[in-house]
Image 1 (cartoon, rainbow, N blue to C red):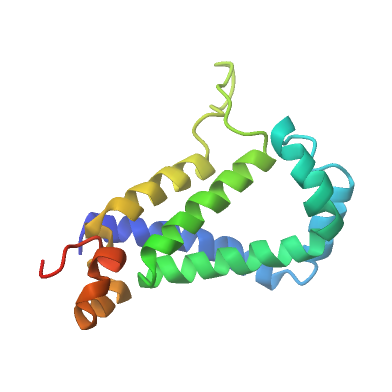
Image 2: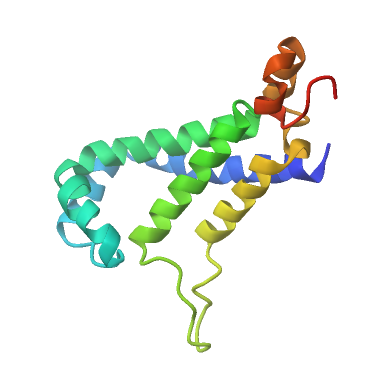
Amino acid sequence: MSGMVWVRILVGALWLNGGVEKLLNPSFPRQFADGLAAGAFVSQAPPFFRGFMQETVVPNAELFAQLVRAGELTLGIALMLGFLTNLAALGSVALSVMIMLTQGGVRLGTGLGAPEFVTVNVLVALLSVVILFSPAAKRVALDSGLARRSPGLSPILANRRRGS
């Protein structure tokens, strides 16, 4: 198995872990809503994102909590199985960026503490971009089987040209 397959599985496991934690905590949506009402995430968001948080997310906090939970579970399962990998990798980048924005974005550290530039979400986003463009990440995957059965889908599913 290619190292890129392991990278894809690892990123999927990270998302699946987060989704399962939220699934096993029945009060997660309420806790998320309470945190937002108290200013968590919103106060740290950059100004261009803060408006979206205040006007859209906060009034619908429990719905967004459910969407985050479902998104993490879906991304985790899709990446681990290699099913619609390119779409899952794009979703992984998008969700990582959204989480980064709610945490204040990417900043350079002061040199006196833990680096703030290299966070788990930055790494997940970067690895997801690599997965997106890597044919090797799709070798041991449901996408490979689908691409073999429908060669016309091969460029989309497995980043391979027809016949290769």
